[in-house]
Amino acid sequence: MADNCPICSDTPGHHWLWRDDRLRVIDARDADHPAFLRVIWHGHEREMTDLSEADRLHLMDVVWQVERCVREIAQPDKINLGSLGNMVPHLHWHVIARWQDDAHFPGSVWSARQRDGAPRPRVPAALWRATLLARLGLPTVGVSPALADAYAASAYAADVPGGPATLRIGAAEPLLDQWLAEHGQTQWALISAANPWSSRCEPDANRAAHAALRALLVQRGLPVCEAVNWPEDRASGWTEPALLCAGLSPEEAVRIGAAFGQNAVLAGGGDRTADLLWCVRPISIP
Image 1 (cartoon, rainbow, N blue to C red):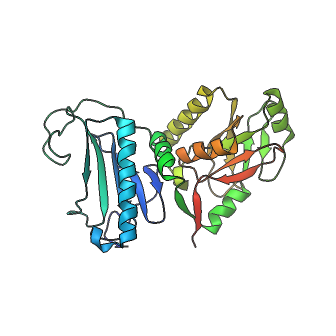
Image 2 (cartoon, rainbow, N blue to C red):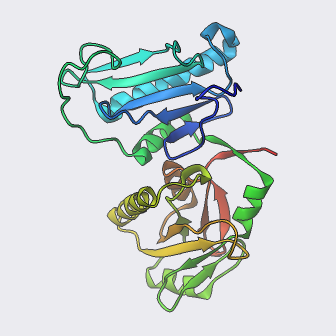
Image 3 (cartoon, helix red, strand yellow):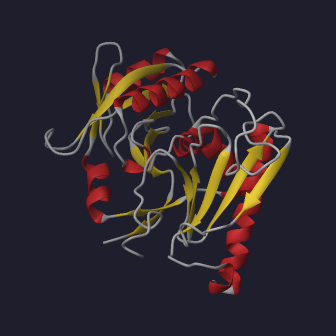
């Protein structure tokens, strides 16, 4: 890591789409180019030939998969790939969807503007994550003992009829059982869309992500109710809105949680007690 490198010193956030122990994929959030992703090597390396052969192959495989995702979602006229690093000599690749009517075509995205680009909607982060997940598998995220303990100690209040129901890992909840029975379901999951990768986001961003999660679950015809978490002492940490959903399998809950950048979800099956399910491949960090 280099102290004066803006790539080394960036912080987790909702623009992180996928990561493993060697690299990460982020949304560049370029105002003129709504489907512009970057693949960034974690280590402070300058050139491709500074990497081992295995690392080069891994990096380029991810670049190809990211290109496939951009083509699949954005349906562009052309894809631009680039690895420059002249201004920031930290190894990273740009994967950019281009259209003939965008602001800079046929020049590069760093060239002089040719026109006011045709407006195109920004791709939601959850859609990027879900597509990358399908191609690259679960992301790898460092989990400290303190964070793991916080997940294990948290309780959740779900606004079921007659509630709120209190959900804790390993515990049953009669009000939850009653709600599930009324809907003819035995499986359930509690999922948040707030603060991806356990990094605080602006309230507006969290509200938008929560609304998108609700829309996804309701569109599938699944019963949902509002929920919220709180830390064990109800003082430290922060609370997050969540949704309790009936009828989701554990596998579906993990996929949806991963799409919304969550480290873990709470879910229950036949015995209806709550289990913590990781939506990432967790690796221990100090």
